[in-house]
Image 1 (cartoon, rainbow, N blue to C red):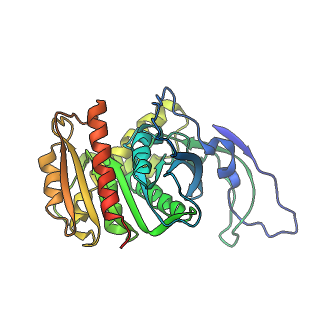
Image 2 (cartoon, rainbow, N blue to C red):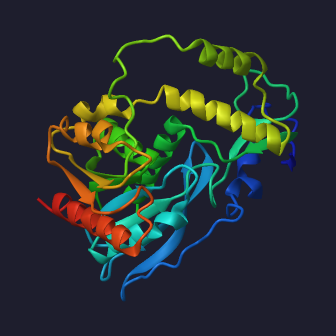
Image 3 (cartoon, helix red, strand yellow):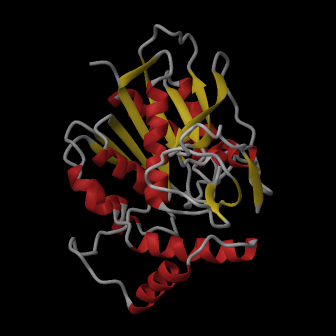
Length: 338
């Protein structure tokens, strides 16, 4: 729990309600505890910089890799890369570097509440407000939550990263791609279906739930209903790390149960190219229930690349290199100038 001191307005000013707490350093994020950051082999001439973008006023962290020779007058295609849940930008920088090596601008992001990004802010004590007022400053106790896996929030983070990247000098706003791994592979196809700015997408070892789920309103199971009622009636922000861990888990299960990226596949525009990269020996994801049937519903250019002998983590250098090369070739082909 943190106490945020943000001052008080002049007495003559109308007391308007708004919390400045999102600007405090706690919200600016910290490295994940115990996080392993692997060295990235960057080709000569490839440069990178750490940047901050905002998603619902929370400051998020990212790293952008630039190809050699880029300048403010360039019109270069660009890609946002989204990590698997529990991972951070550091875990996917090697893929971003590979894309930059093939002439693309590549931005690897941390979601809100992960890595170097800020967290989700909640009041820990009552504060008086009035709907007639739009801004005021208070001193209040707050709780900052991290480590949440909420697909809708992560998708919004990806879309806000796209907006940031479109404002980067040298980037061609009309040639934007999205890359995602694991659950973020589902995010990639969902964003491709709902955001017309995306012209190409790569879903790596993707979880694309919803193939067998009926496309209609359905009632939650009794267990989920009970949890939804409990959270609605007594779901205040947790006050201890242990309580936060439990709440994060419960929220994630509820959110995942209602997240069906497979439903969006056949709504991806025909002009958007989608590549699915799968591991031949994936024990976590059944490719025949996720990527393979999804690829058959894509109306535009699509493909399935199988990384032979690889497991879900693509843990060998050979496997990760093959996946990175497949993604780079796809974006290079479908984000080219027309």
